[in-house]
Length: 221
Image 1 (cartoon, rainbow, N blue to C red):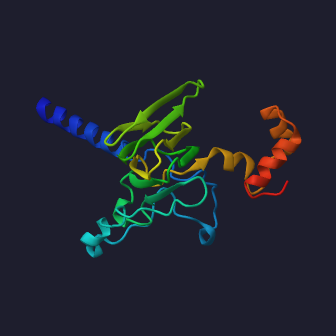
Image 2: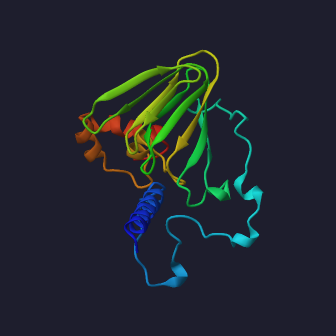
Image 3: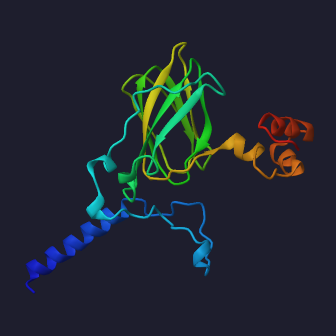
């Protein structure tokens, strides 16, 4: 093989590795416990692929992000996520997209995506956003129509509609299964409650305060 051919081969392999690594290089689930029971096993890191001869243009198409969600309940913020379960052609491509609608003064409560970086674009309204680093440094910005902000993977972030009218944004996420952990729900509303004593000591508050928060998130201490 000529030196030129060898260099071209190395360049191709390097580019292939880069492209492969750029799409969901890590797990798409929270964990994967090994099993030898093939009848009680799950397919990991994606969905089972359709036979390529049966693929149609419709597999790469969906609609509905033009429609606003009902924000009249809860914190006044609702996410409409388009992932591989709603758009089959996204499978293995390492990306998803979402619309977040806000009622007037609606809140996207502090949360994080364990498997994705989020790029957030305001389409209508004025939205205050921020994220917190692992060193507990807070970065915030007021965004207007057309403004873009990035929330790094795994960092707690939030959004607040500052206006007295509805607002919405489009978010792209660097995983087909980004995951969503809302901090307050996870801490005070887990299916099996964290010990009141643990939370009382961690937050340095009375146990009754912890019990109150647990009750607010739909759980009984």
